[in-house]
Length: 250
Image 1 (cartoon, helix red, strand yellow):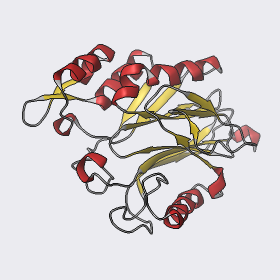
Image 2 (cartoon, rainbow, N blue to C red):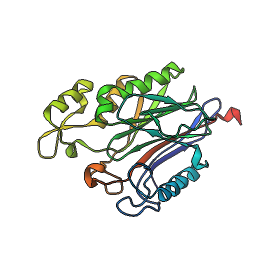
Image 3 (tube, rainbow, N blue to C red):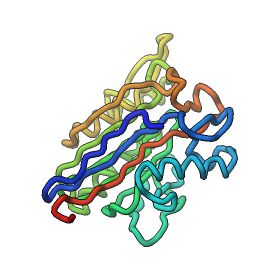
Image 4 (cartoon, one colour):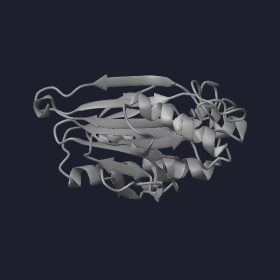
């Protein structure tokens, strides 16, 4: 179910975090969505998606209704999530909360998922960074929104995404990406123009003073992960983050 997970309880006045990236295993969906598809917009059986989401929620000791999703549009929109309302499928590519009672979810199948945390202020965010969002400033929008709410010591985990060997693009799109971050300029396995979105995202985060953990893996090359670029019809895996209350709040 989880490709990567760290659960760190709060210590003293500092908040803790439970953050994960899922993989394809441990669900009930059938091919081509087998098995832990968490995307409700890819024509999978809705009941299977609901059961898959419930399994993830249970692992976080939450109800499935406490998982907060967004309708991702490859933009820079930010949505604040409170504990009372259900964020549902609000149009955004960044979700932010200070509520330990919910978990934020970003869905991907080649794009770069980002999870952000400020342990001192008690803020978390889930960010969807595809090529367009990366080049138009979704990383900066997420950091600005967090800092507007008081975040100062932000750390990030960047999950698996399509690697530049597998992400051939026209030369003009590579130039646009290189403007957003020179680290994104790359070549494919055949020597053609390519973009390394994840490297560009990591560069933008580090330039902004964020401590980054970058997890390895290419979605197209690794069949334990969903990949739209590889399969065409594909499910979605997720980055999920839940804030945990400070030890002093117990």
